[in-house]
Image (cartoon, rainbow over all chains, first blue to last red):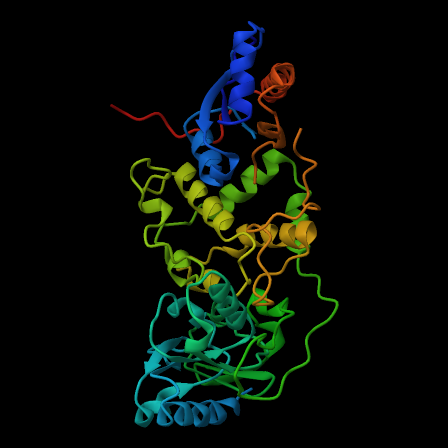
Length: 66
Length: 315
Length: 48
């Protein structure tokens, strides 16, 4: 079981966190590959629907960043 | 509480005759015992059908959404708070309403009473604090306070918060009521225990959506369960889908639920639907000091941002 | 509700804070990994 990797659905807001992710990519920074990024225009778009839907579809965790 | 019906009929007659309202929304006797139905009276000759007793548990604010007529509505404490929520959410205009406020001492839990009489109930009558049940010729007297709906036993808003007319004297509000003892008990469980607890709670659910239909807050033209692209929630009685439905509906009612008990009352299989929403109500009270529907002038906390809003869960 | 608290996290990260982004990713991944796979909430696999 130790080779199980979690799938984390990450809701990143377009203007801030997605930009940070982009910058991390440009700077060739290393980080774990477990996050599956979903770009949202703003965390105002976030809704409990997304969290529950992510879990039912198989995500192991959810991360929301604004 | 029983004498109120004369005053309700008198006020309704006056409102209809003077043309101040096009329609009165109130209760009339249902077809079976302990079930009163909502009724819409447009003509003052039909006012004798209106009733008021301890079986008027339905939340009449459910019938107000997006109506254009002038309406006189019979509203108990919890109903009036839902009317305030509707006004805040722009689903009804205050000027269109004449609210006939009815101070309420609590509604009977029909399942609890029926459960006490395994031979069925032939007749049921009530006085102010006593309920007399006739079963197979034997009459039993019950204390009304022992057979109230759960949310009524914990109610601290028995008087309507907003009204144009009052059908009876204001009643004393209960003090020192521990409204969230149930919630605290669940909060103390571990994640696994909570999972099992909710699994048992919703296992009888048949996805009839009676709770959603009875709820005054559930007025979305397309409910999230009906959305197919994307489909958030399947339609079958799959455990996970049922769980998603109940949790998500509770979250959509967060900060707006007045604990009227209509959902629990409507459930055909007797699920304690309020267990989903009470935790969220407690959280709103703790985090924002907010109780739904108390004042028509304040914006709800999920609508507004104040610098003092709790944010310590954010990294 | 039965979902472990560690599964959901929130953060504020500005566009320029890429190092913070990397740190938070590592943090969140470690937390979720420690909790184990999500077996409870997953819908049964669709039968073709």
